[in-house]
Amino acid sequence: MIFFRTLLVAMALLLSALPHTADAQTPAPPIDDDEAIPPSGLGATTVGQRVILLPDGTWKIDQFYSADEVTAMSDHGRVITLSRTTDPATKHPVLRWKYARGHGGPLQIVVSRAITTDRSKHSTDDNCIPVLTIRNLTNLGLFRIIAEVEFTVKDGSGQSATSVMAGPLDDGEEGDYLASPLFLETCKNLEATVNIPYCTFENGLDCRDVVTATQFGTIPAKIAAPKEKAAQTKQN
Image (cartoon, rainbow, N blue to C red):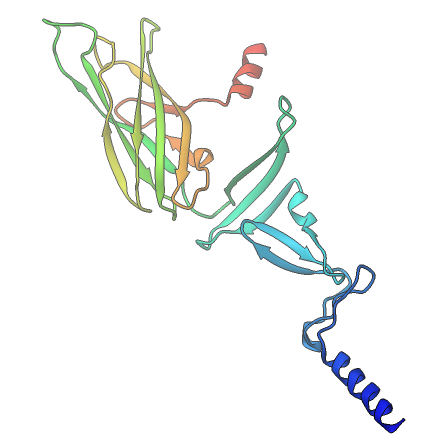
């Protein structure tokens, strides 16, 4: 009898030493008292996503990121505004960002020079070569930008378009980019409209919303209106 009683006590001690496994109804206990998880959950950050760790061992996406607009801090220490909208055509969520007011600067595009080739004896269609200067006034490295530029004669007598690809550019750096010749007789009395189909910082963020143009270059330039705004203006 004493032998069997001793055997039962030994088995009980052995089972108590095994790690506890929580079932579906039993919350997994914290590692120690200092890591107690509050009933509302504990925040954690994974790759590109904020999640909430729940006391029962499950997790969910933080509803904070379902808000229409929130403020965040980038890895470069810049304050940015994140927004979530829905594309009316595809019904898919659209995530956009922009610098918060008072932080950072733009990517500025200037038509800094316009070279007249004076090739009228050979051709009257490619006498103007524009030079685009792109200035990175942000605190982020620019990976690549594509600028599509339409040049229009102010009296409406002609127009021509070209494009350049630029980058990389470090923060505070600028570069000059020679465009292809325009099919115009001269560089005089032109104005430029700039469209940015692609712009990406080195950290992968889209930078199309921070591009600006200036009226104070050799050829005045402006950023093209977004398609939805342009369509609305045309209707009005």
